[in-house]
Image 1 (spheres, rainbow, N blue to C red):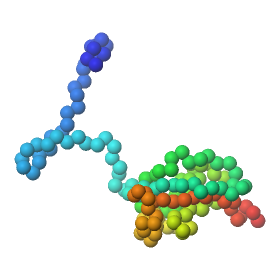
Image 2 (cartoon, one colour):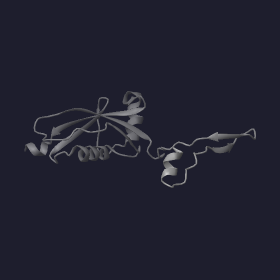
Image 3 (tube, rainbow, N blue to C red):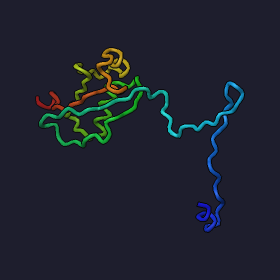
Image 4 (cartoon, rainbow, N blue to C red):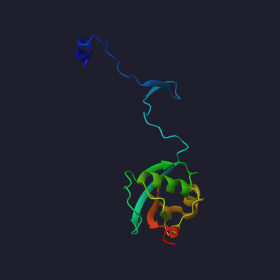
Length: 141
């Protein structure tokens, strides 16, 4: 590594040194801080599972990542908007989002859903939401 920098006339970087933190006994401990931190406001982890689409819903892209971390104050309307944008859904397509046996409403927050449904809604610490695509009743008439 030193040769690489010397050949190019560059200064050799010094290795990263852990910061010292005093412990309760007066001795210092070396602590390495995590490079990646999750902001505290992003307190809900979602698992978005696709359950299918009816004929006539049009073309759509599959969701690339089914794991999402969001605020507990986010609503089902926000999740639907996210799915529409990521999947490139037709405006006439309706997105139904289900948790457990409950069809969820646009205004419900994720925190409310977790509190109301409880452990049945969770899998490995993730709130599991199933979504399906159907033809909007407004399109049929």
